[in-house]
Amino acid sequence: MIKLPPVITIDGPSGSGKSVLSKELSKYLNWYHLESGMIYRIFACLFLQKKSLILKKNLIIAFKNLENHFIYKKGAIKKLINKNFKYNYIISNNITYTASKLATIKYVRKNLLNKQRLFRQSPGLITNGRDMGTIVFPDAILKFFLKAELKCRVQRRLYELKKRGFQINFQDIFLQMKHRDDRDTNRSYAPLQPSKNAIIIDSSKMTFKEVLHIAIKHIKKNQYI
Ligand code: DC
Image 1 (cartoon, protein in one colour):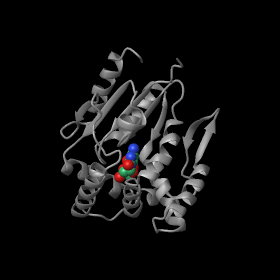
Image 2 (cartoon, protein in one colour):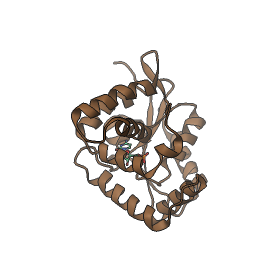
Image 3 (spheres, protein in one colour):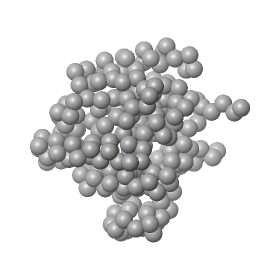
């Protein structure tokens, strides 16, 4: 049987700290990195660029355009690039909302499934999202699920967005995040939930260094890494 490169998944709701953790772990292990939410966000940018009516033909156009945002190497995808979209637009409320809405559509998720799997390559992949441990890489050698109280996550997001020049208040983010949590968790296909064998870390009262320390301890203990 062919042995596939190892994968570590980090799932969790927005603001739980999964992006920064996966970035640090990919540096620590020198593995490839996939922020799967970015695929959904760039897909949303491309979708809104053309049409905003959710019709299959409009989704197909966006899928075609998405191809230009992947850099391939020997059949695998080395990198996702955002090309002509400004980072502040990609993380804006409009794109965040559209990405989460499009992510509820089974047809969209099915089309993005293989793309995400193509990021798997040697020496390994660290990836984060909502369904990475449950659907995309169910055979991952290590699965983390990060969670944190909604208020903590809102504070973190507020800090990040203010740093980037967004004028937004706690209440707005609180409501947006709550709605998005509900949509991501309650969609019928590939909802946000911990995989049965996931290590659950509640980061509400932890510093990032503490979370990183716990994750590295599990990595060191893992016989396949
Ligand atoms: O991780 P993020 O906040 O950048 O993700 C944006 C949206 O994309 C999120 O609200 C739901 C969707 N998403 C998803 O459904 N599955 C993933 N694996 C990653 C993101």
